[in-house]
Amino acid sequence: MGKDENDKPKNTVHPGSETIVVNPPAQHSLRFIVTVLGLVLVLLSHHAGAQTFVQSATGTETAAHPTLTATLTNIPASGDILIAVISTPYNQGVTSISGGGATWTEITGLTNGTAAAGSMWYGTNVSGGGTAAITINLSASCYAAAVVAEYGGLAASPLDQMTNNSGTGSTPSTGTTKTTAQANELWVGGFCLHPGTGTASVGSPYTPSAFAAVNSASEDASWPQNVEDAYMVAEKVTSTGAATVSGTLNDSQSCVGMLATFKAITYAPPAMLQFGFVGSSLRLSWSQGGLLEATNATGPWI
Image (tube, rainbow, N blue to C red; front, side, top):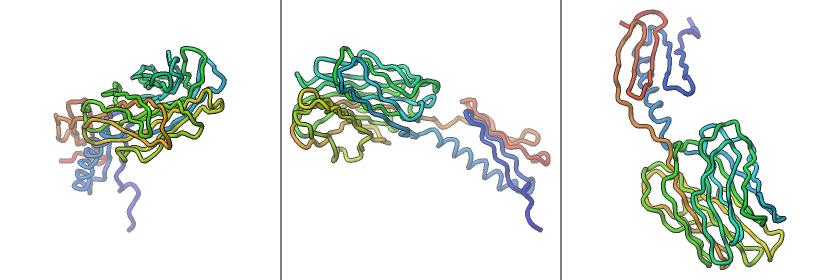
């Protein structure tokens, strides 16, 4: 006799909660209990170290306007974090950013004499109902370039450490942060150039080599008078440390480097409050308010 479809365990995960309901056949009690314990392990591992790149966009202003726009492909998802690196002339800067359904805050910004200048911002409290267009308001009409990226799996208040650096040379560096607060983080670096030649660019190898390019934007239509380049790089880490990154230029240029570290969502192992049989259900509950309930459709377990 073949197996009926009703002999298969039915597993339902309720999105946005810590509740899992499983309806097993009565003849597979041991297998079911093992399944439940496995689901608990999956539940505990779901929240840790899940920082994920979602999308990025670039924007350039080639006609000296007071605003700059970078338009993402999709509207940012609720709970995600937005990060922006903006390159401007040394005597201009960013006054505010809007869009993406986020609340935007400046992390750092600096200039290198009368050449390169840049700033790094991040957007939190993303509602999921905002716009895909990110509008960067400049202190005056100027040429500018920007990179914007969306990441998921970061804490609601994600910013941990930051650093910045400026100089002229062929190995631009962000400087070094203080030791990070937790193991699972996203480290994001930004480089802003005011190149003296139209072919200058920041690229690999990066140091540390685990950093990888996210995206870059170059406003070079008016070279050699007005050229602004913005680069973003990132690395996901699983241990604490002092964050830094340097890149490679194809010739000596004025550059500003910035780096910020963002905390990933963490999930403390739950303190189990209850594990037992209640009528036809096997229930596991813990202090954070979670409940895992397994119901035997054919009657009491014992």
